[in-house]
Image (cartoon, rainbow, N blue to C red; front, side, top):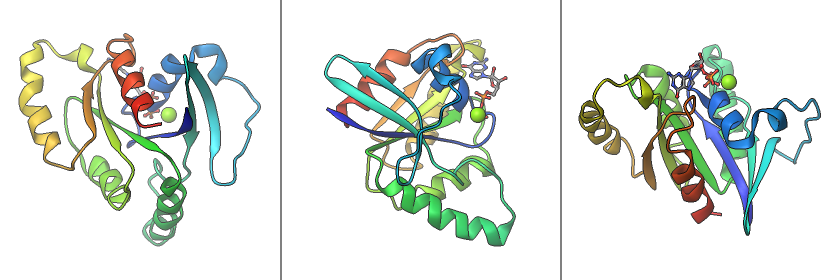
Length: 167
Ligand code: GDP
Ligand code: MG
């Protein structure tokens, strides 16, 4: 099986860190950037019979001025239509207007959206995550909600397995 995976989220939530740790540092610094029709391919990860093609979708993670933003939203959303699964990365600490904007951008997508709640290594007590996860679960019908730490490579395998189930 093989399919396209888009990692989306507001700036600074850890998208690049996550992708680097999934793909391996070396792969992701490649200077060659192959293009598909709509996406820039960031890297390909093959695990057993499953091949995940991680792509970047322009307009999903920049804060554009309003008018341009509206146009980009459309473009970005239509580019996202042909991905098989979206990984929506948020920070465990707080939900911001930036997160809300990304949620809005992906709101019309029919493909599964996996919520990756990043930076859990910063938590003093894991229990304090629970109310936050409950709040997040009401934002959308997420296919899965996975707390993880991209930096410490904690719980990345469940994320990759979840991705694989939707390819
Ligand atoms: P992006 O803008 O979404 O691509 O975010 P980056 O991957 O550039 O990460 C933004 C900052 O958050 C960097 O300083 C990262 O080191 C940090 N960061 C990313 N993932 C984690 C994590 O799991 N735990 C902690 N503590 N910091 C993280
Ligand atoms: Mg980045």
